[in-house]
Length: 165
Image: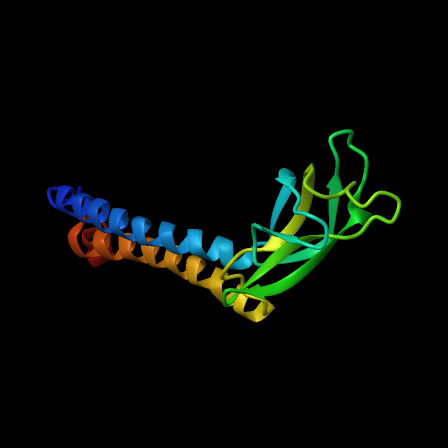
């Protein structure tokens, strides 16, 4: 049979190396998630601004068609307009109150529920960039596996089995 006295050293090296690699890979993967996925907000409670004023909503630029409902769950989206506007050097989305001819105050300073999708800060608009960012995570995971095999061949009993073959 083979000699297994060096496996403890190899396992300790794998544990420390893989732990460090996973910590780095987890932080990269978290960043890649925000760079490659659009996020959604559902029924976010927001107090609207006065007529012809605006409220800044969370997110960089909205995608799709936003929806607004009042406390009675009636669709009141037509009373508001959504614009992507540069504000303080950053791209934000803004909920703007529009005039309601029948009642000028019907959409102003009221609590509404807003539903919308948006691209978070740092979102990669180009599909090629998003694919490359995902490949970084995949190659990082492959590097961890290669590291484990190299350590087991160099310091562990796997190297002894390969040398005898």
